[in-house]
Amino acid sequence: MKYIISTIGKTKNKQEDLITFKYFKRIRNIELRQYEVKLNDEQKKIEEEGLKLIKSTPKNGKLILLDEHGENLTSPELAKTIVSWRDDNITGVNFAIGGAFGHGEEIKKTADKIIAFGKLTWPHQMVKMMIAEQIYRIETIIQGHPYHK
Image 1 (cartoon, rainbow, N blue to C red):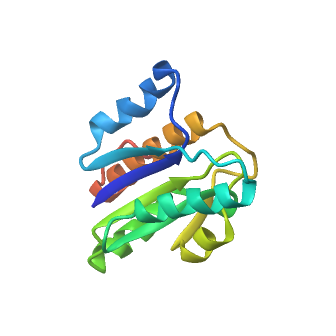
Image 2 (image 1 turned 90 degrees about the horizontal axis):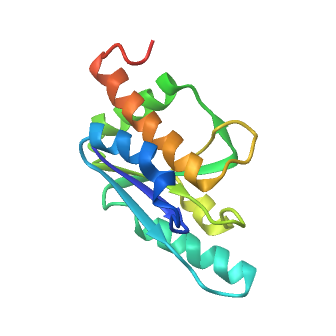
Image 3 (image 1 turned 90 degrees about the vertical axis):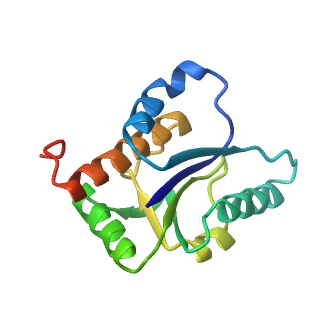
């Protein structure tokens, strides 16, 4: 399975990505894609950001949005979803983190799943780190590794 974490906004302080990349080193087939959209109109910006995130999804892949209004899952539940997709010959998953104004309606309609890390709003840098850790955790659950207890 190919994993992509796609974000709107680029990290300005490389120190903020150290923990994220610690998990990247442990995961095979993972990639970070960062996009910036420079438009003044908020609605147009949201929709353009959504298009970039959608296009970042691999062919024969699934799109998971990270959104505070999404579904709260346990790590084993998310792992079960990934296993189900693998069994259906899905080759990649794109975890998409929206911009400051959130996700637009078009990408929400396109998404295969919308998940949350609770009802709180998190900074993008922390969400990148948390989803990288969850991808690592998912892989260890699938492999029966004792990391997830």
